[in-house]
Image (cartoon, one colour):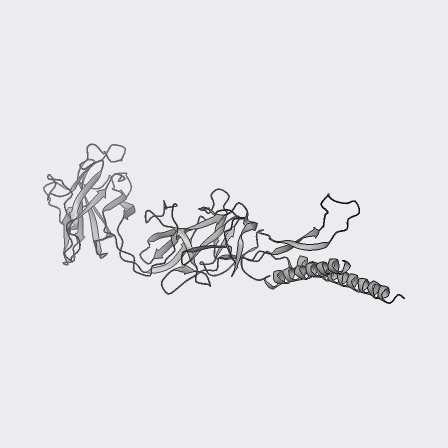
Length: 425
């Protein structure tokens, strides 16, 4: 009996040494969670219950418990490296089989999918609109980075913040506006607009003061033929017809009811000749124009068109939104990183490669989003280090070694006693 008790102690001490050695070996493994040995005594009882003088039968390894405490977040130079600051696991797909990890060292494979070192694909929620304001959180999908060019967008609206000098001279209505004659207008400003093919065209707005607090605004744009063409903004009384008729109040703001258009907005057709959409409706918003006693000046001209763009980089925000940046200054949401949590993370089944699978003990995965509920935030350009405390593990080594030596001594002592009994005459 004494031999078996001591042998169980040797086995327990050896298991403790193995677990501690595994922790030390993975002290530098990204996302690794250390384990600890938990032991239970072996106690044989008789059918009638526990006897007052019963002796225990040794020790056994009851569980190898995982410790999911937070590891240090270490910053890197790769924005595809991700760390979770708080609770949650990244969700991976291995040919449809789900795995979970805290190791966020991701890269892009030859097909554009974001994967870990084992080729398992990172799971995200797909966007329901390209701006990344809403996502389909009811289903998971592989995150894929497209290397194709970003599609262009034709200009459909132009808004401007311009001050027209109230001291400017009135140009008689009988003087026909001519974009090539500066004496027929008071002020002009240029900007770029785009057709449906992404081709940039230089557009110019001209302003002609026709009376007290009254102006005509003309819009011209190059159509690809070499000669700028007027965009008809609707006025039939301007000279020539096609201007936007603007009426200002005495305080210098635009009179939205007395002016033409709809609340200071005028729509005309741009007609490129390079094979793009023709005609292309464009709305000009003059509602923010002013007529103060300072010089003619432009504060801002904004238009919603842009050309084609090449992929320049990937950004991942703290909420997990993955956005692609293009050379045309645009960005497009590719997805939102999905996180998962469990009622009992210690019940997860270890798969190796710093990944886990759900089990009966862990419970079903609870999917969510970074920064919501109990889920932590995502840090791009960082990795979560192992949570192994080397100093504590070295102490565990000494303790396990002493336990092993003590149990070995118990076997030696039992052997000596047995030998003495055998040698008795």
